[in-house]
Each structure stands twice: as C-alpha cells, then as structure tokens.
Image (tube, rainbow, N blue to C red):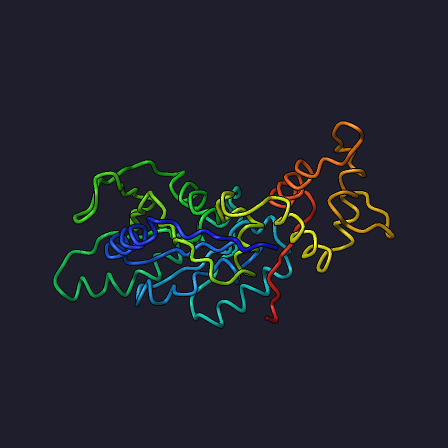
Length: 281
C-alpha cells in the first residue's frame, strides 16, 4: 500500500490557534474514537496541554467492540491518570457523568481563584481531538439543554463563543482540531479507516483492501457473513463485488463502488461493532 500523505500547509497556523484557545480554558475534553483508542491519541497531547486537567471521552462506542471499549477505558485511566468516560455521540445518557466530572476537574482552579480574593466563575471547558472523532457531537450533546451564549472572552476572536451549559460550566462552542502528522503509517491507515484523514490523501481501493485484511484478521466471521462470502473464497474486492452484484458493463466487478461501500459500511457500523487497536500492543 502506498503511503498516506497529509501534512497541510496551514498546520503551524492550526497549532498556534489551538494553543491560543487552550490558554483560555481550565479543563479540556479530549475525544478519542473508541474503534481506535490508541491510534486517535495525539502523541504530543501532554506537551500540548501542559498541566490543564483532562477528561478523556471514548466516543462512538456504539460502533466499537463493547468488551474492548471497557478494557481500553481501564487501560487509558491507568496509563494517563485521567478520568475516561465511554460515550456514544447520539445518546445522552452520559450527560450528567460528563458534567459532574468537568466540575470536579475544575474545582482546584476555582479554589485558587477564591484564595486570590477573586469571585468564583464557571469552569471554562474546551473540546479537542483528531479530525472526525466526534468533537462537534460532544459539544452539541452538552449544549442541547442550554443555548445561552455568553459572548467572547478576552484574547480570542469574536467568532469564538462560549455557551453556558451548566451554572458552573462555560463551553467553547468550537472544537479544537488537533492537526495530523502522519509519520506512523500504521496509525495513518487506521485513521483513514474511520475517516479521520482527508480523502485527498489516499486511494479508496488501497485503504479498503487494508481494512479488509484488518477485519478478516480480527473479525473474519462477521465480515464473511455480512458480505455473504463462502468459506473457501478469498475476501477480495472482486469477490465481494460479485457476491453483492456490484457490477459494471460486461458483468465485471465494480471495484471503485465496492471499495467505497466497504469503507462506508465499516464507518456506519453495518458490518459489526469493531475495535481495531489491540489492547496488548
């Protein structure tokens, strides 16, 4: 498979903007994709955040292997010493857990303000993460019960607005996008699987073939069942196209369409609920 290249020319500008935003907040929500909990971590997150308290959210858990998601939660809490909450973008049953944990994480900052003779204020929170891990979904979940814009804070553009999601929490309504540096091709590949990499950076067919190999290593039974492949068949794009009757003129397999469908089926959770990062790596 050819290399996935995506190193945007504006990456320095994006990092600078992110650091400006971070200078205004008391607590950060780091959103990871539960299907690739390790691969969606920004390797330099500690350097980026410094001492800002962090809440890790394993998002899109409804698309991931439930047992492995729980195991990853325990592993990440042990590794980083930060609280981890499992979340599904379209379910709100974790709303209270997130709110309570943010208030808890912001408490030391509020105590310091009071000790300085200042009045306590709502904890200022920002959501950060790799592209397409569901940052906006988390923001929308938190602000659904409150649309109270509190205006801009000093030092940031007027375009950035704060929303009071709770009497004790203000949330920046725009996510902090961590720019990708795709040095590790295995990680880049997994980010491409979940659509966290621009489609301009790779060929659909190549990524689909790599995804098939990954899924047939970890979840072969579910993959063969979904695409109605016989046990003796190789899981090639051609065989899947023929099995699904995705053909072009002359009854030839439509490879382009098949690759696109496989990627979409995986991303939508139609093949099954899968986690691609090994807990033992």
